[in-house]
Image 1: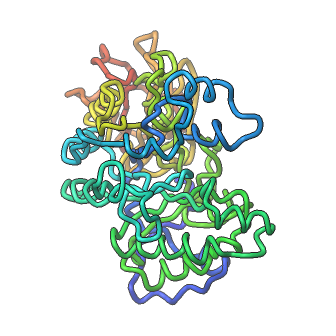
Image 2: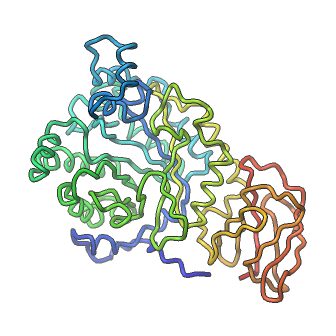
Image 3: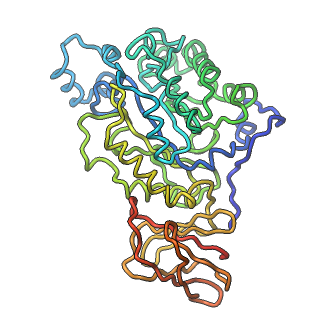
Length: 447
């Protein structure tokens, strides 16, 4: 097997302390739970869920960018009184049907091993009672409820890992706007808002993953990212288990941090040397809930499964996003996708969870076949149904002891070698129904 270059390990409590510089922080081994997990659920939920129009960037598109998006301007003009302000949406963010136990059951049924909830998006509204976000948080306004804490308890009761998304910047915070006006030579926002809130959030909720975002307008030196991460890795209550991404300042993405996001919906195309994650959304046009979304704008289940398979074969984790409504329900179509992923993983999860990339990631003879490995087994995942009753795999090197099975099928499959030193032709049975239109062959005693 090709050496797997990702730095992944259990972090020892006796490890040397990390210094607030990238050479030290980047050398920290990634806690092993993350690479083994492979699949997570992303949840974009906040005040932006109330208008449920355009995307979670609605406020910026309406009143931030120049010129404003005419669709957003018309939406407000046609549906709200002339004096209506975006902050008025907070009073309509009731979350009255939010049942964290039900959400956690759905996420568990998806097969996901971790969940990442938006603690704060770019609009600045926190889904918990942040002492640094007075009257612009889910306890003082809207739901009058600690959404972060309530969901976290339900998630952990199901033995899932819990992560929190946090935007470094806030579109309209006056301290941030003043720092921006001063070309980020001042740090009033970071000193008095961002960092106290981050420290409080970590100590209070102890997330095992911090999904940082909103970093691109200023360098990491403005955000004090390395100081925060050094504290996180050395002295925080989650110092041994926490995982971070790479969005800690302009130019950091795909270069610094824990694992790499690089960009939204990133796919490297080949096996990278660093652990990475693909974040993507069932709704291809938005991360937050849109009341006007259409079926053709959503990823169907086979597309989701194929995307998951390719991501894992290339050594990545797959973070699949859903956007709940402002009343606290997960739209049925999103639930259907998540449960569909879980149904596929119930049969094929052996090839996904705790797997490693193989020496060859993909071959395409008559259909695309993606490879993963675990121990002495190789998994060949067919992301399309073969049109013939045989399948040729040219890469595996077989021996007389080699064995081929189909996950979810009771009997070994017949096969024959193609060349003396490699390749085999597999006789396929009638393939059983697969909710994701993908099937997994398990090859034992092959190289």
